[in-house]
Length: 478
Ligand SMILES: Cc1ncc(COP(=O)(O)O)c(C=O)c1O
Image 1: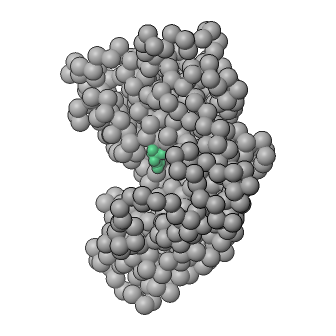
Image 2 (image 1 turned 180 degrees about the vertical axis):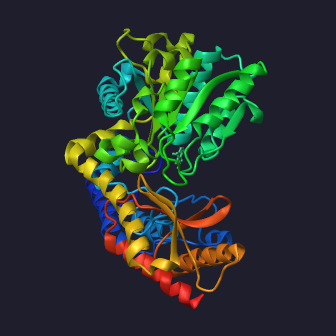
């Protein structure tokens, strides 16, 4: 049956919707089913993609199955699957089926999450889910937060709140500090907020690439003596580069001593708090004035889902609440939360649903195990490189930390550091070309290294072994 949509009303009969829906579900299930057999890498030129997609906007209807197969075969086939078990690059996003279905439900109901008046049920689910994350991170009951698009937006909201609370929005001579390993979204957030480049100072790191607390103290003291106004320290709870965790308790002590705001960027690493090992690594996280954490990274949710938590919920309100006359109908009672007052967006979708549903269906323990699996896989990688693979060929450059490990290959007979750098970059290139695994590089002490972020619960030790072996074969051919 190929009933066309009615022009102008953009709808289908229930039977046709079911038929279409089932083929969409088939496409979704096939993606989950087949991801392991797909290339982990996607390298295409702009010209190739333009040739596939550039066309005038279609004036007349096309068959939905044709459009769907084009999406599967042309659009999605030309994107890297970030949930591939051998996608080790950047921060993978190994999402889950329940959350994908929840996203469709959310879109179907199209809840407006800006005002309690139109979404009391969904708003309460959102509040409960935020409180779950708050409690898992050990923040007090006064803390509240907001689901946002991701870590960048969470960092922006947190720093806007810090600016409001500590500076009353007067940015003159104000300085924020973070380590040289802090994420680029912080640079961007501070720039967007109107801080100049020299108002965001990068502190050196110690041997484990964690913020050096003594260097920070010296820097702050010098700035105070120069009449500047330190107001915020950003601690990383899992740097993107190496998974390093800054000394959270020492930073919290310094913030208390000097009356500074402590923001913790746990966009990637904070979910490790679910596990025994992560809890230990993240001691002091609960002392944050604000915290970013991204369910779309290590809580297995599809994009876009970040979360900003603030120790005093009212500080978010002080920062973002705006009233206009046309909103008088949607003010509501005091206990009725209007999420528009807690962040930048007025119109917002129901982000919590996917996390709430997947936690309901799988249970927190499954999430705990899934996070722990990533921590253990990085450890396994280190063990394998140091003791099982061709051990004298591999150098572990940063120890396994929160699911991340960096290492490099030492080609026999090559001593020159620049030649070793070039060799490692060539290995990554060869792996790209093979499509077998997606591995990215980063710089540690200005030297390129291979970096694994192994947070996919469907990744196995065999995936790690076979990827390293593939590198070793490529090294022989290079
Ligand atoms: C530590 C850290 N902070 C912030 C971000 C930015 O998050 P998003 O890409 O979700 O905006 C990332 C992204 O990888 C990250 O690893």
